[in-house]
Image (cartoon, rainbow, N blue to C red; front, side, top):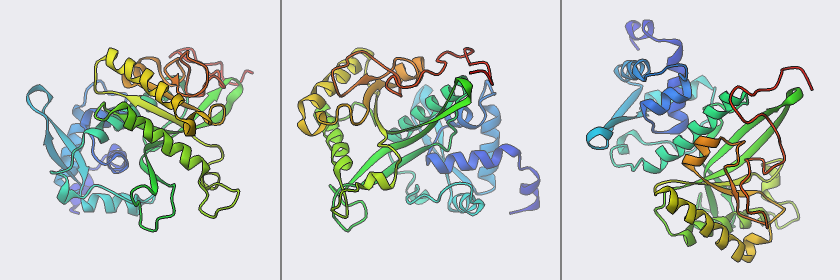
Length: 314
C-alpha cells in the first residue's frame, strides 16, 4: 500500500472494512447506520468507501434501476485478508467471492442486513448492547449424519444468529440469543413452516446418539427462533404471520416444543417501529395469541427511547 493511501486512512475505515466483511455485501446507507450513526447523511461514508476502493480493499457493483439505483459494496481479496489479519473478527467459513459478485443475487442478504440495522439501532436507543458484529449471517447447524459439509438435509442454516445484551434496572445484564429467519415472501407459507420443523429437529439432534444434544455444546440455552417477514403489503404479511402460526401449531413435531423453546414472527416494519422490546412478535407456539417482545415477556427493560433507567439504582 502506498504511503499516500496510509496517510489518508481515518479511524472509521477499519470499522467500514470490518462491517463489510461481517455482512458480505451492503449499501452505504446500511453502513452509515451500523458504523457512523451520528451522521444524518451518507456522504462521509461514501467518501471513505471511494478511498478504500482506490486502495484496492473494497469493490462495488451497481444495483437497482431509476431512483433505486445504487452501489453495493463488498471486499476484495486484499480487503478480506486485511480484516482477517487484524484478528478482531472470527474468520468466516464462507465469504463473497469478488469474482462472482456480479452474478450474486444480493436481495436476501440486504434484507438480513436491514434486520441487523434495526437491532443495532434499537440497542443504541435503549442503551443495550448489540453491535454491528453481533449479527452473524448464515450460521450452520448439523441436524443429520451426512459427512459432506452443509450437505442438503443434514444442516439447518439460519439466516442470522443474533447476540443481544439487555441492560436492566440495577445494571443487570441479560444475554438474549436468537436464530433469525428473514422471509421475503418468495416461498409458500408451507415451505417457511417446514423450516420450523428443521429447528425442532435440531433441538433433538445428537451426533453421538447420547442424551446430550448438539445445541447444548454450542449454546447455554436454546436460542429463540425469530421469523421476520418482508416483501409484501402489511395486510399480506399479517395474514402470512397468522398462517405460519397455524401451520406451526398443526405440526406435531413443532407444537410439542411449546413452553420448551421460544418462537415468534414479526414484520420488518413492525420490528423497526416497536423495537425488540416492544410488542412486535406473535408467538408461534402455545396458546398465547397476543404479541410480545423478544424475551417473550421474561424481561422488563425500558422500552422507549429516552426512558432509560437511572444508572446505579435498583
